[in-house]
Length: 246
Image 1: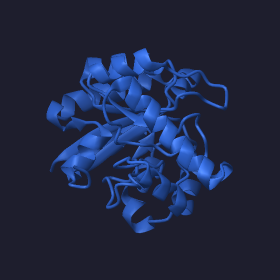
Image 2 (image 1 turned 30 degrees about the vertical axis):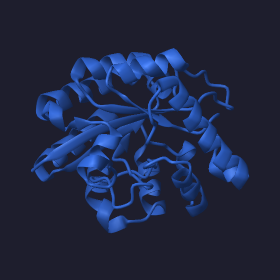
Image 3 (image 1 turned 180 degrees about the horizontal axis):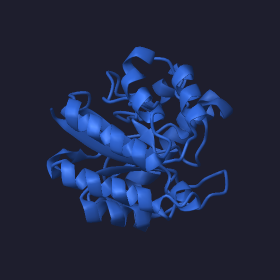
Image 4 (image 1 turned 90 degrees about the vertical axis):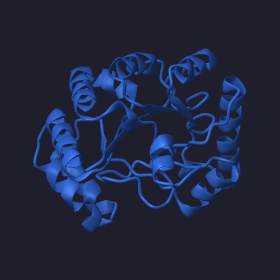
């Protein structure tokens, strides 16, 4: 069975440069979703950093201009946040920015339509425990966040986000293991056996904060050993393989 692997990383924190070095070392594809500034006070990368990541083969995606949440922003202001963030990135990169990730994962119908209207070709959510890229390019799901969630948090997330039958196999695997590295190993093994998409995502600042560089390194190493390079893709690359975007 064919497994595609993708990773994505939110918030455009300067630690993304360290993360990119490790991803490059293992030949793992990735998309970095970058706001221009962060209203919550976290530092962000700048134009030179975005260009360096793009030159290294990574995809740069939008994340609003200053990390605005759709539910906390008036509709017109939200649409402007999406548009301005995309424009600044494209001006810096000199290239189109097709992808977007919803801050906080908030993606109601109006928020999705604003992203579509801005000219983005797709958008990634934080919906988890999925083993594919879904049927809607503006609701791209994920498999697992690089974060040591307790089992009860994963269980509540599973119940709250619906699509229970579709997500049940990966939910059972994730809940059967107490540690992040064991969960990632189990999900990789399942993907290798059954095919589909393994989509690992997170925040570099949380990896630093929670001391997760070692388990992440193990995960990247195992992916590189098990999955051919041509199947380690960016988010846009996965959606292109699925025929959801051009």
